[in-house]
Image (cartoon, rainbow, N blue to C red; front, side, top):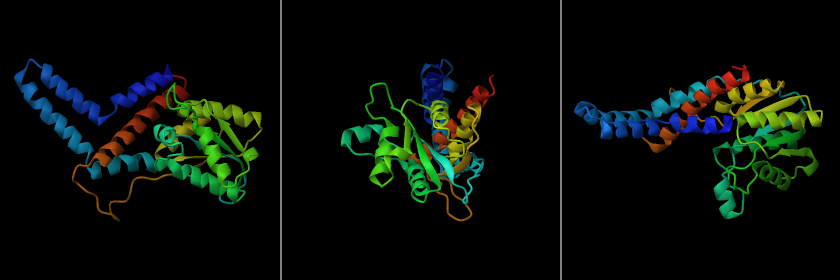
Amino acid sequence: MFFFFSKILDVLFSPLTWAILLCLSGVFARDSRLAKAAPLLAAVVLCTFSMEPVSNRLVRWTEDSAPRTFRTDAKYDAVVVLGGLLDHRQTQSSGTPSYNDGVERLLVAYDLLRTDRARYAVLSGGTDTKDDPIVEARELARQLESWGIARDRLLTEGGSRNTRENAGFSARLLRDHKLTTLVLITSAAHMPRALAAFHAEGLAPDALPVDYRAFDPEKADERWLPRAQALAASTAALREMMGRIVYGTVSSGR
């Protein structure tokens, strides 16, 4: 039920969905003024969230709240890598791993394993859909093994479909192997929600946020021309904001 609810929210907290609903309200409106105003309002919504100054500020807000407690002088029992960096359909079609912008999670984990700052890696991530044959955790383990990391240092859980399940299934794996000093790697925008999910499982990993997407507008120009890439970034940030509210409610037991 929680998984289904989270997917519904993904659709609802999208400027594109809002624009479509506004257009539909105009089509079915009996009031002629609303019928005329609705398409204009839809265009305003799309243009606003498609501008880089808007999307960049939304993303910065989600990333600035990400704690970084990683200790450079520590040797961790395990680095926990959350899934969401593998493109399942492309991987299935091509027969080789196809990664999205979140691949930095895997690269940083590899560096920790390569330099012995982490003894084990816990790779968390399952299939994308019910009929999906690609189990992300297994693919990530194969990738690390091909880079020279011994297979017995790679622990996988391939049953999770979201952050809540990432934390729950990883917690069981960590306890089964008696791994206590942990560092969690995920994208900066995702880190506060991921930490909340792991804290709800009674774990307190150090945080190593990666994959920063926003930038300082004082150091680089922002583009005002509406772009699809900015709309996608705004949508991801809005969904993350709502996800934090939902996960906070779940974690607190309300």
